[in-house]
Image 1 (cartoon, rainbow, N blue to C red):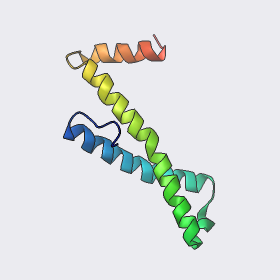
Image 2 (tube, rainbow, N blue to C red):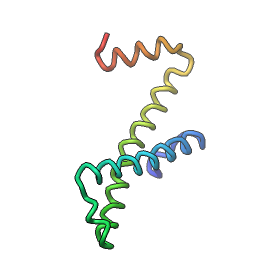
Image 3 (cartoon, helix red, strand yellow):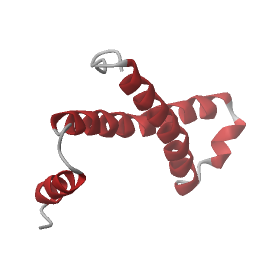
Image 4 (cartoon, rainbow, N blue to C red):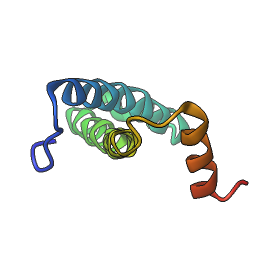
Length: 93
């Protein structure tokens, strides 16, 4: 977050909230999926959980920042134009 600072405080707050939520939910998903519950019994396991939570939040930060750039470039476009741009980018015409 510090290396590429958002343009406004609003963007920073939204990106931070999305990152925290994605960290918690994504980390919990990974822990459940890989059945790592036994790690919670040791201090080292809890530290490993912190790494999982941190890593799970990184994609959310990238996606939110990408969305802000995408939306800023199309600030005055209508919703139909934005949907068309997204469909063209994804390749689903």
